[in-house]
Length: 206
View 1: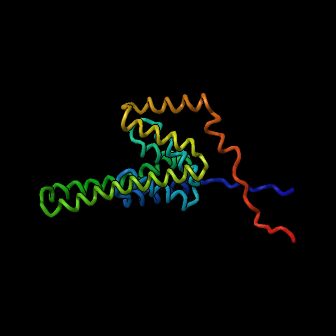
View 2: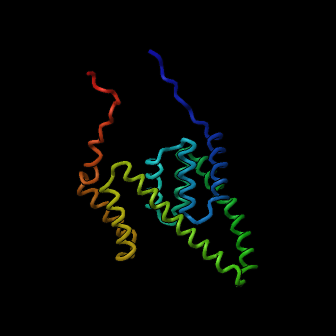
């Protein structure tokens, strides 16, 4: 019997790759957190670090932590790729160029603020940022429905709708979702127990 060769990850090379990728994200992902998440998702899938479902799980985990969720997501992706060194590399790569660009743009904004010719471009930037947020939401919903988690996705949409219009405490919304999952686990797993049968593509013999 032939033994399978196990592939060992090299934390240093993995961390360097994470540093380079996240530095590109930090220097090009304009438009707020939604644009950063979209760029992070594209990079993770393009480099083969994880699939769409794994990235979606990281997005969910980052939302469960208090504070700035994008930083939590950065740390989780870095750890998944290259362990603890990947966490530091991802954080440094994302924050260093973003901080430098933010300081430069803040100085520029102080110089041009109040000029009539800058009002329309600033409004356009706000609209573009809203577009990034909507696009990222649609991508996450598409990934959720692709895994046939229709009921789970519906609960998520209802939870955030309730959070936006009815409830002021996100912990209460998450608590309700956890209680529902514990009391009715079959509600979330029912659609995943019977995946659709894939056709083999073979034609029946005449």
